[in-house]
Image (cartoon, rainbow, N blue to C red; front, side):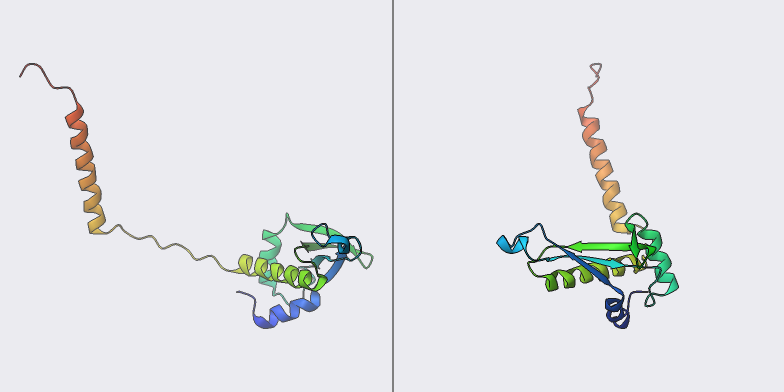
Length: 147
């Protein structure tokens, strides 16, 4: 169910990037160059993702989808911003990698836990600990003065 290498390569073509000025480091450069990158991706319009993958992603990302106007049509878009680096290219790459990591994490099927029985040794150890604690508490009780 994970994304294949071909799907990841084709995702690059479906990405839309917007740039703006970064608030991070860069000195005087920060006031002149647009290094902050927003990666926009429409899950519904994707030709790369399968219907099952789209359904899973739409269910799990409902709170993170934003309505954006693209070519006079409102669409639900996933927006990932990156302003970590001083260059636009590195930020574009990082934003894309973030998107791929997010998709891989969400699409990965969860492995069901197989219930196991406690081993005989662990059962014995548990019972011995209970007996030891019980005897310790028995010793703390008040003695009868009649004897």
